[in-house]
Amino acid sequence: MAGWLWLLFLLVTVASSAHAQNDVGVSAYTLGAGDRVSITVFGEDDLSVEALLNDAGSFSYPFLGELNAKGLTVSQLESEIIGGLKGPYLVDPKVSVTILEYRRFFVRGEVKKPGGFPYEPGMTLQKAVSLAEGFTDRASRSKFYIVSDNANDDERRLAKLNTLIRPGDIITIEESFF
Image (cartoon, rainbow, N blue to C red; front, side):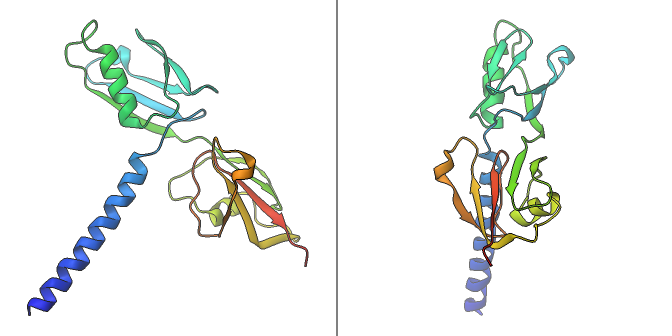
């Protein structure tokens, strides 16, 4: 009987660990140009805004001016706004930042409709190709490359159809020679 309890404990621990790792991935997302965020300051409607991060990853915020959010997580941006508002403007500001719209990802190469597409959490390369209306007749079915946002073109990585993509990624579908 003790063996079954140990196995059950082990399975629950592994499942909890995998869930926690997924949560870390979501909370580790860093903001960048093209992301649209909602900032809510509870009890202060004048300080609650929606903002689109410009090409430098910044936006204008009441009382604080231009804030640079590029490379920050949602919780880091919340802390920066709280720090700016606390004291001269509010005693104990309660700030919530949420992502309304992620920056676009791009599909190029041998797809029927290359271009930029809105990102949604859980996006895979296969879903991205579907948004680009599928492969052309000349498309390779095994040579897919991804260049992550802010990486050099020579930092591309080979991907599979089930590879998760991120906002800002550039996906290249190579041409097949056979």
